[in-house]
Image (tube, rainbow, N blue to C red):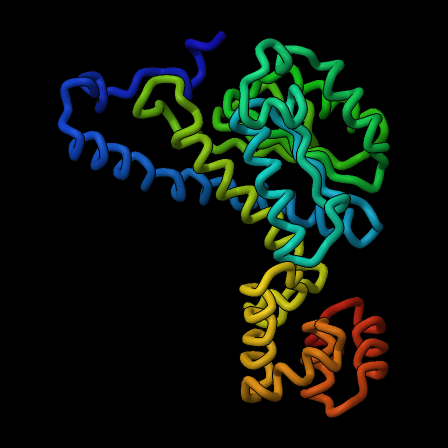
Length: 294
């Protein structure tokens, strides 16, 4: 029942929210938001388990699939989309499924989140396999659409992760790894796009970023697989080469072009003073890890 969920309870500190000044509302929201990282810290072991599962999926040629409804589903899509330019992966590698489809991203589709069979059909469409990891996201922890996805993923042997913002949530029972971030009552009762949404966004950041680092998508703290799809990212690519190798701008630009605009290859070419072909071979042998290639 909703009344038993901490995310649906009334916040004692905001009972007179409508009587507060604008500044008081903002200060209260900011104060509440500061509790989110502490709640996440309590679940770090399970977040680590989720990352290790995703790394294994990537290494096996599998994918990371986020599944959710409403805000939770939109956050999954947001994280998935950003993985393409940040880590240079195909849009197929990290995907987000939203109850009601992409139309529901900008306009609520009533009732779709209550249909568990819908998630199963969506996962069938993308040909889910045992190599994949499915992450079900639901602030309440009880969304039927998410439960349906986790049930189907379990049936075919995929790894399953549940992210909720209530303890002892229903979706946790359907996942191998259950991440329960108790964010508590919202400033505006039941508006889980607030603290709960913030918590989900932070955890998704952790899962995708740490997993990508785990398969060689970083050198130091540099995003060496960045996909240069615009002028800003082309310049960032050159700056990454400069930071990684300590060469000047002109040298970085020259090797960037020599490497066919592949940042990793350019870095290895400079640091090992080798040809593009040799650099590419070393990177392939090292599984895409720049440090190992060096």
